Image (cartoon, rainbow, N blue to C red; front, side, top):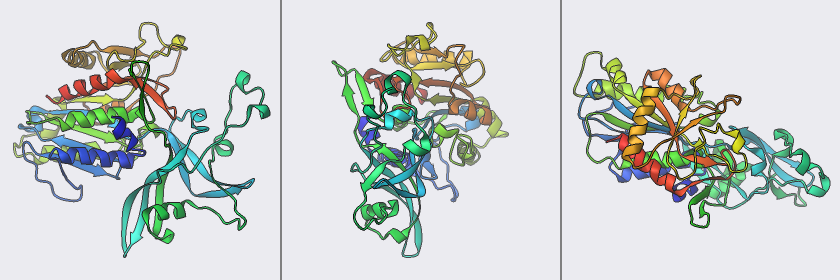
Amino acid sequence: MLRFIDASPTPYHAVAKVVARLSAQGFTELCEGDAWSITPGGRHYVVRGDSSIVGFVVGKRSPALGGFRLLGAHTDSPTLRVKPGGAFKAAGHHQLGVEVYGGVLLSTWLDRDLSIAGRVVVQRDGVTESVRVNLEQPIARVSNLAIHLDRKVNAEGLKLNEQRHLPPTIALEANDCTSVDIESLVAKTLGIRASAILGHDLVFYDTQGGTLGGVNQELVFSPRLDNLASTYAATEALASVSDPIDATVGAILYDHEECGSRSAIGAGGSFLRDVLTRITDGHPDAQVEAWPRAVARSFFVSADMAHALHPNFADRHDAQHAPRLNRGLVIKHNANQSYATTGATAADMRALCREAGYTAQEFVVRSDLPCGSTIGPIVSSQLGIRAVDVGAPMLSMHSCREAAGTLDVHHAVETYTRIFR
């Protein structure tokens, strides 16, 4: 999992890794603009926008009779996004303007060795194409202010303004005082002219890789555990499918969850519905009123990381709902539908966890705190599919570097694999 996350500094890289894993297991690509040939046992994947992907194995029976068993996660993580044309100079420093993407824990991005990765749109020989890029080496830093210049910071807390305090330094001014622009940096890495770059979707990331931690290596320390840990587990579960079952099984890995899913490639878009209806309509075992019948027989598991009990802030949890690291997946509940879990779908999930050899944990946010949400309610409400929200417990969620339990990586893969059996 750590190798997967280290190689996936952006959703574009994560999807490329998923494609490589599924391709090695005999999955072939279907393009949305082409006509599809759907046959029982077919193993395929569909990519939209370079950063969202659906992989699936076609069931032996029509979805109207076998339904869908679906596992969803997301490929994006909170980060600092590079602004287009954002290069500027201040106090002898070359800096890049950034936008905060998602619910970033801002202070954790200070004093990190940062690099840039993402996607650029280039024009070569009259052809426009998207190209992944990763500068890899540390080129940037957002430096803390020395305590000597802010003596009250430890007592009153660090307060950061996103516009003024987050632009990283990427170079110092030379005598010629020329600007250092991102297009030139990316072009050098790709071996092309800067003028060939027409647009970009680039973010900063911490160059320190993931590692095992704790005296007994019972902990995982890594960036982007939320939610590449779930993306990894979902990919492994789907890749392990050998023979088709009656149901069509699939994994949907979305971009843009961290900013609300409101995009053509996010959970609020049509991507999953488009793929599922084409499978339903194209299955050779044609059935009357196939789509609504398929929905009625389907199950969706929304896999996103969960809040583990923090030993220094135990009072932030409901005492009866305080998940522990390395104790297994957490079923998430919310009376106001911030999570899609119902009593019935929770029961189904508990049964899967028992099959995997452990008892599921439960999470309900304190009644006096607001609750976060996931893709679960979005997918469930759009498609009418019954759903459950689950996830492996973790600490430092939305930090530049996060922490989880090593055994829970195994728990996730083993449990999610059972969804497709």
